[in-house]
Structure formats: C-alpha cells, structure tokens
Length: 209
Image 1 (tube, rainbow, N blue to C red):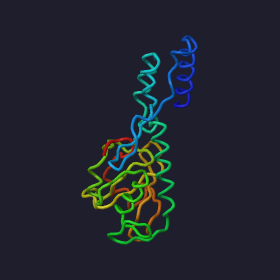
Image 2: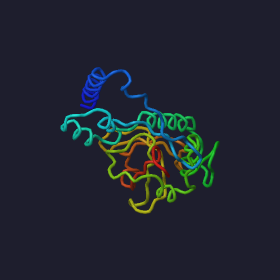
Image 3: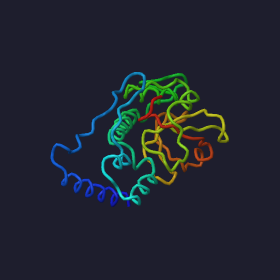
C-alpha cells in the first residue's frame, strides 16, 4: 500500500512540475540542521511534507497522516539510523561489565551511549536517564530502527536499555543490547524473558534531546 501511495505521489509531483516553468521547480532537499555534540540532528523532508509541496486530494492527505512513523521517516534520518546500527553490530560479542562504556566491554546504558556518540549525540549515562531523553513513542507499532527500547522488572522501573535494529510495524521488534549473561547481542521482543519486561521506547534520531 505504501509503495502504491509513494508511486502515486511521484506521478502527481511530476505532473505538477511539468505544468510549471523550470524556475519554479522545487530545489533539492537539504538538511536544516547539522549534527552537534548537543544532539541536534539534521532532518530531511518526510513523506507527509509532500502535502506542502504539491496539492494533494484530501483522501491522500488522510492516508499519509495515518501512515506509521516508520513510513514517514525522513531519508536522512533513515541513513543515520542505518549508520548507527552498523556501528552497533561491530560490537556483537563484546563482553558485559558493569560500569563500562566501551570499547571492549559495556553495560547496557554504556553501550547505547557509546554507540550514539558515533552520531555526535550525547546520551545520559544511566538507562533511567536515557528514558527521559528524546520523544516518547506511544505504540510499539510505531517503532523504527535506531529507537531506544526500555525494560524493567515486572514492566515497571527501568533497568535495561537497547537499540531497535528491526521492527515489523505490528509491535514486534529486534534490538541490540549489552546483556548481563551474553554481552552484546541481538534479541527479539517476543522472547519469553523480554516480552513481559518491556516498558516503552524513546526516539532520539531526529529530535532535540
């Protein structure tokens, strides 16, 4: 469905451009911010911003607004998330050590803070602190790669954090984290251990933390 919508949007934009002289064509999209140590990341025009560029039928506008966040994620944000996950996977197998933040050993929040530094983003040192950063994600179905996911005993107090590497759009996801028993590894949210402990998620990429 999303592919069909994007194809239709592209056709509509092509028609719009064909009717206008060259001087009125939309310039290439460029980032409106630059990554810094403060955590401000660059943004790109997302799919839902197309309504500001071309006049869309009301039904298409409604469909775009109803899209999950992962479908509307900006192109540059996707590239940043891919870069982040690639960096995280380089540490698969690294051992767990309480209080450590890499590069040879990590605890859970030490791992996430170390990996996000790869993008020039500074996270707080504890999982509880990171749970207060970025933007809260209301539904697991809106998760996308690069989001932080948090866990706790009996689904209450946060005591563990990981990074989403894949999400199916239906609330199921895989995440990379520094586990106490196996070090840095990738686990699934459906795992019998993690499923009842999932507390929530925060979006860091594309937000002012």
